[in-house]
Image 1 (cartoon, rainbow, N blue to C red):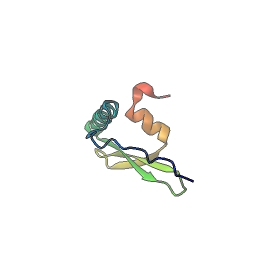
Image 2: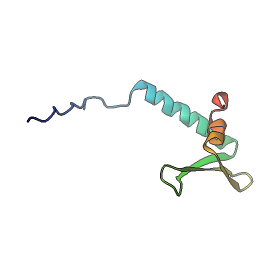
Image 3: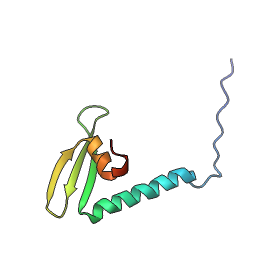
Image 4: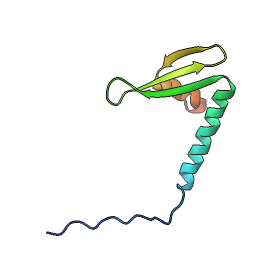
Length: 82
């Protein structure tokens, strides 16, 4: 019995697709907007598998609080908040 053919990898592609680059640039702009307002979102793995913990850090006032993933999304993408 023969094994399935090995998929070919296009090693000539030296950069991510344009759509991915656009998303990276957009994420950078959102991060910069939060940073200018003295805030930062920090992500970490939670105590349970698949869980994500998010902290909102306010560097201007030295405060930090845990926020939900939905709150983090709303802070980073206010136009798309639910």
